[in-house]
Amino acid sequence: MYEKIKETARFLKDIGVDKPDLGIVLGTGLGGVVNMITIEKSIPYHDIPNFPVSTVTGHSGTLIYGTLSGKKVLAMQGRFHYYEGWEMQEVTFPIRVMHLLSVKKLMVSNACGGVNPEFKVGDVMIINDHINMMPEHPLRGENEERFGPRFVDMHEPYNKKMISLMKSVAFDLKIDVKEGIYLALQGPTFETPAEYRMVKLMGADAVGMSTVPEVIVAKHMGMDCFGLSVITDLGIEGKVEEASHEAVQLVAKSSEIKISKLVETFISKL
Ligand code: HPA
Image 1: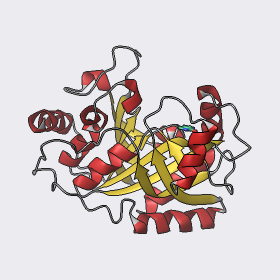
Image 2: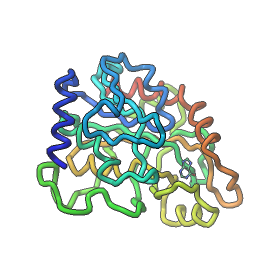
Image 3: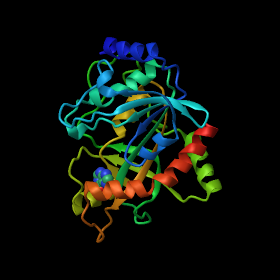
Image 4: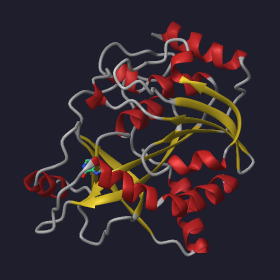
């Protein structure tokens, strides 16, 4: 695996990807951020050696290298979800590659269901911690010491300085942001009312189907992580409504401008 990751990193280096300041996983909600990047290289996943490529969906995603708010960024437009059938090593492969390209900071985003009664649809939540309830752990198996230690410290999964920075950016821009704990389930079903209740009882504020594997692997390699969620539906007792992918996309889209503004200023101050 290490050799494959190295080969992919070398390929990207050779075509000009040079020590990005920040890695970005553009989930639902951060899609609009792409429009703010001055693109230097845009590489379809299927043109990148060893990158997981979906033969099912047709459109596999694009890796974007460019400048955003004065910083060199490497952004994944499209991520690999566990529920799609990818192995955890495939879900997190791009994060490993980013590390070999000297990326030290990672920003991730997602759409998720809110279970905190103070949340409303369209809210942006800074992820300040997570609960890993995925059925498989991305670090299970023999440890690759060249990436990091067997037992990974997780006392600060999301970088406190970056969280404070985003809070002050949001304050200055007068954009309301929430903060909370993200719990990851495998999906692809949205939660039943009883499952939403379980998520809340477990101490989370929001629930989704991604992000946690990527963050764990990034922490394994010593990266600083920052995460944003868009609350696209609510799993609040008595208020659980029908959820659909289309509705999730629509809410995420309507929060894009707000998020783009936050992210643009945030990155300029990183
Ligand atoms: N649950 C899980 N994933 C999601 C949700 C949800 O309610 N909304 C958007 N992604």
